[in-house]
Length: 113
Length: 116
Image 1 (tube, helix red, strand yellow):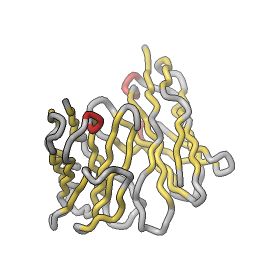
Image 2: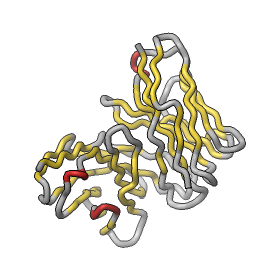
Image 3: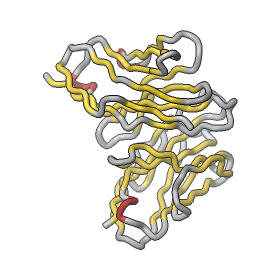
Image 4: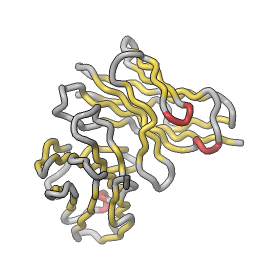
């Protein structure tokens, strides 16, 4: 069974631009979560989607948004990029029910210049 | 609010030596606890998890962890490490809220470096 797939793996943007990251969960998983990983702040929860609905949201500004499609694929968008948005963005999926174990993708590394 | 503290940011050890990576959590409610490993340029992989029952949990790659409620700790151990265990290790907690909240709170990570 294929794992969580994130695209693109690496990207470079400049301040003020916007970016869209994509995540395809493991087949059959309907929940997708996003985390931001930086050296200073570590891993921080962005949001979780289940069946196209946002279930939980972390403490990030409104420039960070996401959505989920009917096939469970998810995208997250960051508008008006700032230097501090440079990070590894990790997507994770989980099966319905269960103990909440998350299965992570390899991440999208965003560099903002 | 819950928080997870990993007491050591870096742990260097020699190959075949035992290792313990420390994790403490704080929460006003019961939690589920996890250890994840991250190899360079990769995502996170689950090592083991504590949900309930036996406080000694065994995971993959020879790792184990012990849940200690009185000390609010969940330390990760391995009796003999290999070079290939060099990676960053993250402790994480999730509130046991009956299935409505799957947000993980992570510690800042411990970089384990195994030297020959």
